[in-house]
Image 1 (cartoon, rainbow, N blue to C red):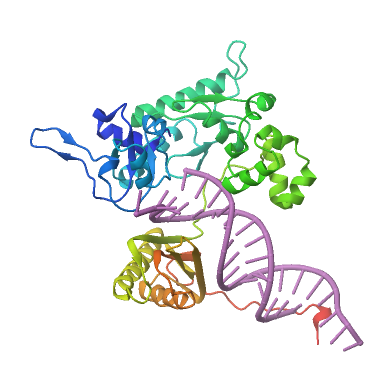
Image 2 (cartoon, rainbow, N blue to C red):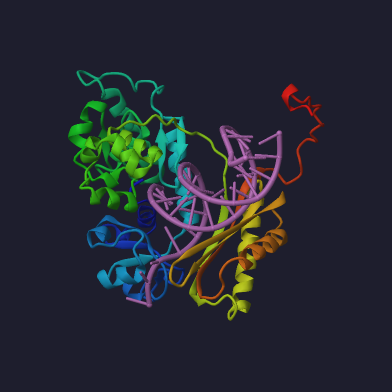
Length: 387
DNA sequence: TCTGGGGTCCTAGGACCC
DNA sequence: TCTGGGGTCCTAGGACCC
């Protein structure tokens, strides 16, 4: 989806269409109606406190206001950009709507979060057909029909990449944003993919691209021409081999159409840094509340967890994590609180904290009671193990 | 006045077991 | 007499993504 959160907000406030708008921050900048009947919107200039831009409209991006940017920094850059608070419930609703609309045309879907999906068009009727002398005409028409279905259902635009695999589709979906459609087959990789920066590959982040840059590898093409043995020596055999394959547009990953959660967590950044001991009376209830939220999330999603973890971010931004595995899985808030407290005690508590979080891992579907009582299985020792 | 919140996957060392 | 080779689980940290 194109600038998803921002686009949903523009549906609610159409008078902001074409304006530079950012979404993010806390809850203190709700739009309000003035006595004269006009809406009054907060701007970045009005914002005080911690937080980042969650997303922004394309005009705001043109001013340098991008997602992930600190709000105070964004305000210094472009003080007149309109600032709206995030409304996740609303975005989740639109997310369901666009996915439902797509599913009517292409039912094999991998969910990649609130605003992104992969589709397998292989078996969709008409996708393999040529139209006139265009062998990709059928799939192109299908992609346009999907875009129209999304627009009809939500009023929103999306961008699609149609290619032989997920890696290339992800890359291509970005090439003509917003409202884009890019169809690319393997023979066009050199001409259309190789000139792009290596960091455009999903899986090459800031660290890896910086390391590549120190070896004069900036583009995907340069990466493709790097010696695979050298890449493996430099980046490890797993990641190095993947880098080589990715640069050549190779990706065999199947669509994952359903998956179980691996972990579940809640965390919060404080309005001001808190000292673990000095601010105990403030910190304690927050910590307990996070445990209660995690317990609630576990119940809501039908899981119990066996490993409890805490995350601390200190005032210097350093992150420390601690975890402990319990004898049995639970979703009980008091039990989680108790074990989270034990985790906390093993972490350094001599400097101020910026953030605290609670996480459950080793999740099991269910309510914590064994579903069936497993009978004891008779076991015969192998010959060579007999005493 | 810097830098949210919710995730996944990978690596690596140590404990422990056969 | 210095000492193999599997395996799993637990823990901590880090890169990356939406």
